[in-house]
Image (tube, rainbow, N blue to C red; front, side):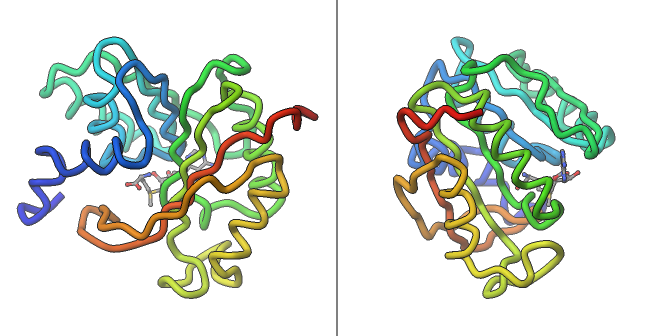
Length: 196
Ligand SMILES: C[S@@+](CC[C@H](N)C(=O)[O-])C[C@H]1O[C@@H](n2cnc3c(N)ncnc32)[C@H](O)[C@@H]1O
């Protein structure tokens, strides 16, 4: 993370996360956490009363994140190293208040995305939040599995998995360690849609 973005970890990110709906005491899953641009501030926001699961298939990123957590004396981050082919999330059903899915979807093929939405639905509490930053869709530096999808297509895909769109933000945020602007889609579980 460059010196020009030091304000991100010194308060800006916490404001961002509170704005999208993360609260003190929440249990959060940061799916595809990388080195923790969102995990670390989320751990500060949820405070000692809450916790953040830091999930990634890349063990080096998780190790780096945990080192940063140690320097900040954050004890409420739980590393979850996963294999990308394992589409199960190793967490209890209805145990999570919020899932962050930030700048990850372009890594994942359509069939796997479907399984992941189903798993996220399973682990979220009844009014749980799924917050998505779908970077790299057709109109935002297209890349990988999202390069042929518009933002609306991503929205429709997630809605078809028993979520409804609660709010859409266009925000200053961090992407690959630098400031950027992008859309955040906030979804909630549809009541009564528990088919999984
Ligand atoms: C571009 S980084 C984004 C990191 C972080 N979410 C952020 O916005 O700063 C994407 C991360 O997702 C992880 N990832 C991709 N596919 C994954 C999968 N199927 N399961 C777990 N992690 C995955 C990658 O290893 C990488 O660390």
